[in-house]
Each structure stands twice: as C-alpha cells, then as structure tokens.
Length: 90
Image (cartoon, rainbow, N blue to C red; front, side):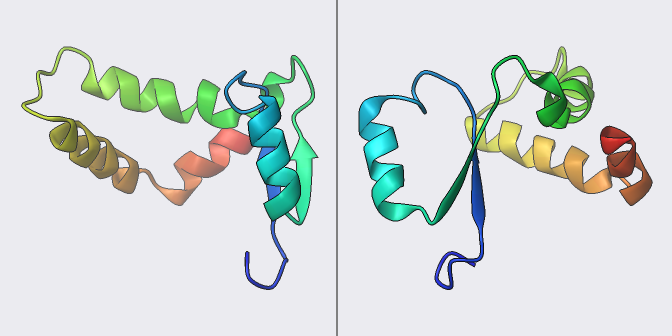
C-alpha cells in the first residue's frame, strides 16, 4: 500500500511522534496523514479493550525474556475471536 500511495497514516499526539524532526520526516515520506484530535479516546479503541485484556492475562506472570513476553502476548491476541474484536469498535 505504501508503494502505490493508497494508505493513510493516523498520527497520534505522543510528544516523541509530534516532534519537529518526525513531522518533517513524515511530510517528506508520507502521502496522506490524519492528525489525531486532542482528547479523543474514541479513536484509540485498543487502549480501552485490547490492551487491558492482554494486560490482565499477563498480570503476575514472570518472563525470562522480552521475546517470551512478546510470544505470550501474540498467543493471547491470536486467541481473540472476530466477535471479540468487533466488540472493541461497537
């Protein structure tokens, strides 16, 4: 999608993402960019559905490495049904 210019980047308002150097880079390399309106949590459904679900499943577990954390998180996400994910956007 990037090669043919048919994608849109949804940019959030994290300070590291909104610095002048990042903005300049994105203006140079991005076709279309959608700014994230301030104080708009409805655009970050994962913050209110997906991340807490994964976080609660991982709570209290000790991992030997970062790779083990990533593998377990991916395992949990792969177990989510389509209906579960649709709930996130309803």
